[in-house]
Length: 345
Ligand code: ZN
Image (cartoon, rainbow, N blue to C red; front, side, top):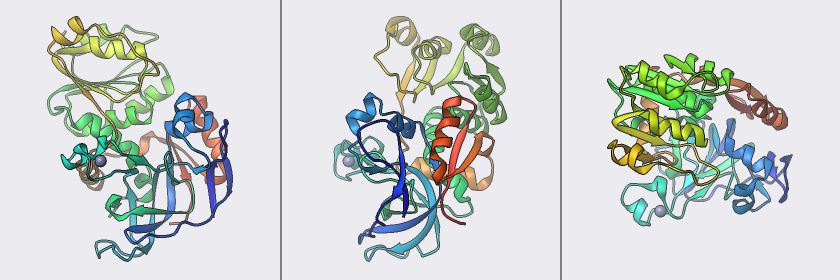
């Protein structure tokens, strides 16, 4: 079967043939229809410090996908059937560590991620533990293939109190754009988005952000105060990891506000704990992955009911063979979410 792999410890990805996986007794075998390209895949392609420390080539890359069940393992019950359209949580967790036993599998200390620590989804067939598989119901595989990333946005936004509150999203990559849409759908009074890239900022507007701020043209903190009656934003979702955006996120939050941190800084950053956290009474929440499985249940409800539509943030679709074109358009900055078309519907 065709697959996109990290073949060796150097920059680049390769499209090649690999053996089809076997379906273990607790697995379902999925024929991949669509897959989402994520920033993580870009890091693996570039072979940056993180990738060098984590990836052990050769490995099939890609962790966002949706497709059709073609085989059921012998221990898999009748909750799934052949031909069913599904996606899956790509974090495979141990089930027995303190995090897992307390209902916090998203911070399992023994997490193995598909497309990172084991073979992933940029290929035709993928075996997944049945416990990780999520039925799509009426949700199409295009959207199903990006529920991993959409789930990051749901986890970031909905673990704060949204109804009746103002929400600031700093960083309008695909997950930031989704976050703006989720906040709008969940009843925010005003959604404010910031990004230095005008293309991405406009996408956040299409997803439902009411106020768009380009930090290269405007003072972010002053404008957020102006838009919130002088108080600052009730909830801030920091999606960029950029040190300047992080500083603005802390300063633009209101007294007693909630700061949700998803963006990953490349290096340690300096924070004024006394002014920006302690005297402000700020709540700071680190967000990783998707809660297993409440985030998925929330997403299914929002997507199935149509109150949240991620498609305005999806800008490009490419066949699997054209992964280089997909990476090029992401590098250009003039892209939102990029999807690979792999199997047939
Ligand atoms: Zn665990």
